[in-house]
Length: 106
Image (tube, rainbow, N blue to C red; front, side):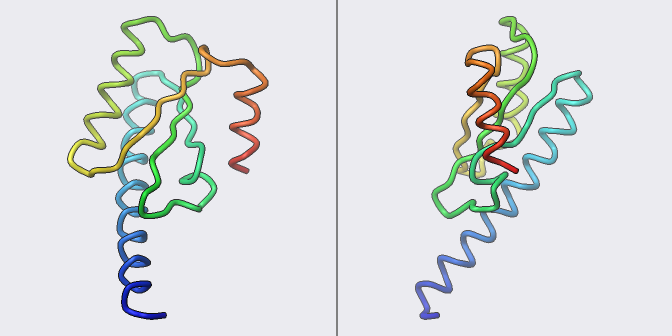
């Protein structure tokens, strides 16, 4: 492995560890508030890279107050990390698409 590959690999590892730590706190805080969240996408598949984002699937009803609470919870944990994220609310997509997202992560 050359120097640039080593640097990229190290940065990807550091970024993945940061994302995993933030997501662990998000899941813990969400659970304490009665919100069920699944990690989907590259972080769940263990293919998180330097330019990956965090994808979170939020289960259950999403009235405006609950949606805002989840958005704040996630933003608070990822603020300052420079890691983008996507919130996917299960109530906004079909049951089939939810299942596809969950199956993709196994």
